[in-house]
Length: 347
Length: 286
Image 1 (cartoon, rainbow over the protein chains, first blue to last red):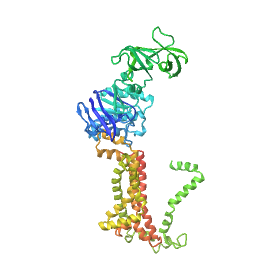
Image 2: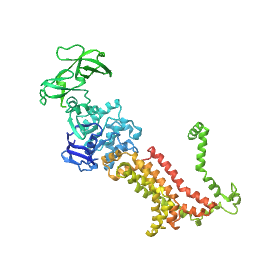
Image 3: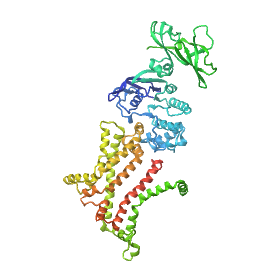
Image 4: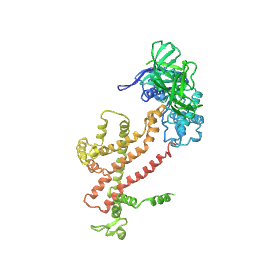
């Protein structure tokens, strides 16, 4: 159980600034995702926490203790690389035992810990296999076991679900979550995939161009992004410019939209109105109040869900719902959205 | 099992494919045939295609084939030359590895100014004729007192071997991601443990290939050894040259030639088995 803190951490490679003064606090036992497009500095941040890179300035603290200068071998962290980096010339057993054996753990204790951890990751039957003889999910479990056996104070993972197919992804997600809660280990992982970040993390740090854009829980990040960039990165499809005519009404190209009053915005402000596609109610008959009229121009059927493109005024709005019914293309519809689900952003 | 798969394989080859295989085999094995014949000849005069008199017909006069009798006798200095050749080859290989492993690591992983120029100049010793290098080195080595010494010869042998070794190891290092070494470090391994337990085992096939190649090149270098050995250090190539310098390949020269090929052949067989086993990860780390 270790609390991790980044204090004004900055990293520069030559003239290129990879990370610009990032402050981040990760609570003990928390599972945090560093999310951002490739090249945004998230991997560099992870590598600095691991000790593979030294910050150019600022400090990294474990439980309040500055570890910025501590060499990677002494930092007692764990890292699961994206391609697992299993040693191809060693069996599963040798791979997993690598950490304790280079640290000089006595043979008897090593054997006991090995049995225990192989049992946890359900790989006892595979202990004499070589990495090349394992599936992707098994390789990842070996990599996790190899790390957990060293009892790291912080566990780090680079794109933990990226190399797995859809079915395995769900399985590994639950596995990682269970393991993390069982050991109560502070875990940080890096991803460029917002779905992966929301699936796994307690909190997500969104990083753009070396800056921390937002650090929040997945639902707040998704519903209440701090900026247009974050909203865009989190996959928001319906963002329309508008004008607040009063505290609770925005005039947009779609029509008038009722919003929940917000302290930071007041009447007369130019705003961007974000409408999450699944928060919109699609009605085939005009409701008594509100309701923006439109016409369905396209329908995409995904099995469990269905997505409609609706022409509303000047904009095309995307609406998705559970596929309990299918509304035909061309049908006139009315869109309604609860004011508290409408989110306002500055330009 | 093996013969079965062999026959099924050969039955699928077209006549053309077979022809080319035979041609290739002819080029590889052909040069050895006259040597073998010569070493068992008693008299083989021009322009006969085969020896006029075989040793077998004259075995009353000589207990052993003439060539082998001489080669195996102490007068031939073959034993001394073999020991010199193998020892120099081994030392050159070890030093070459020690220089080239770190160099290859830098070339494979780092970017620095003048890297492409450096890579180009690496091959220069292979382009400049050996004779020119040999003469120039001889002047310097005489001055330094290295001429005619083992140290001198070993230094000279490093010149044509380092470019090959660096190139081979650079390619191998490029195939080895940083991940593995970083992972080992995170797991608590010291630099030395990383090298011993992760880097070297993973580089091993390439290291073995490079070492083998270096050894073979070193055992075959004639001119540099000849110039810098000053006749005081005899290796198999210089011994052979002194035998054939007269312009004829007599029976004893043929015998020496066959001996010259032995260290290389033995090493090839050993490393072939070694590399194959490595590739499947067997017999390792136990």
